[in-house]
Amino acid sequence: MAGMVVVNNPGTWEAVYWPLEHAAWNGWTPTDLIFPFFVFLVGVSMTLSFQTLTARPSRIVERGLLIICFGLAMEGFPFFNPGVWRVPGVLQRIGLCYLAAAFLYRRTRRLAILGGAVAVLLIGYWIVLVSFGDLTTDGNLGARIDRALMSGHLWQGSWDPEGLLGTLPAIATALLGVIAGIFLQSPMPRGRKLWTLAFVGAALVAAGQLWNLVFPINKSLWTSSYVLLTGGLAALGLATFVYVIDVRGHRGWAQPLIVMGRNALTLYIVASLIAKLLLMIPVPQRDGSRLPLQSVIFQYGFEWLGPPEIASLSFALVFLALMYGLCHFLYRRAIFLRA
Image (cartoon, rainbow, N blue to C red; front, side, top):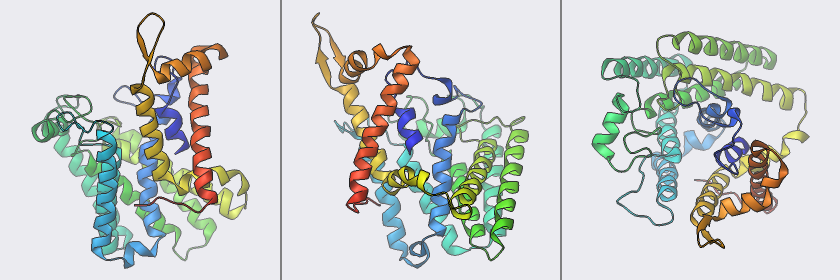
């Protein structure tokens, strides 16, 4: 969540360090890991809560639909113009992934079956995508489906990085998280579990890089190679965090992350809405022109700090500090917004 805030809120998009940018199309940067890591952890978290298994199916549906509705409301804010209202979005994809992964998890906890579902999703997506169209922004099958169903309601007009078809491999990302969560709760000795999880993570990264030779790693298309790469890196990260925090007992440094993580939905929604408002609120200038409030804040509050990239990153870090302050306020008062 901290990475998401920093990436989404630079002082100016004209000056951003490359690790904080998405890959233009094929390939990946550290920024391209944030979304799939979150989806992976959605899968892990549902195995740590008995509610996923014991709640009524209607409660699972309600939770998934509520996440989707939050996402739709954010896309429409503040004018809610139905003519240009974007339908796909980050929370919409998370909601759909949660629904699919939760119901499959409720159906079976057998790793072989869950792994088979991942394989079917990834191989099937690969075959469909390369068999019907190309892998360009406008020519890929997912973009064509989205234009047919949601023309005028997509992020880039002719395509959307959170489109319908790309949600299928994203479900596989969530299922990889489910598999990791189930495995970590197995009776196997902890040390062996962590080494196994790390080994499997490294194997997934290698497999993703190999698949990249024929099916490029691409975040916008959420390609199968991208799922293996990011799922493997997420597994390695999870094994590292469990070792450092649970095995070695080094917990204090992670407290700020816990504060933000406990109110992840609040953090994402509030940060996104404030960012929108900062770009929409006009500030009159002496020459009669108008600048967005964010540009004014950046110009007078941060540009003097040095090179444009440093100033832009400083704006993002101050924005993160303010969002942390909000989360800390809520955390101290045990206020947690959950779907």
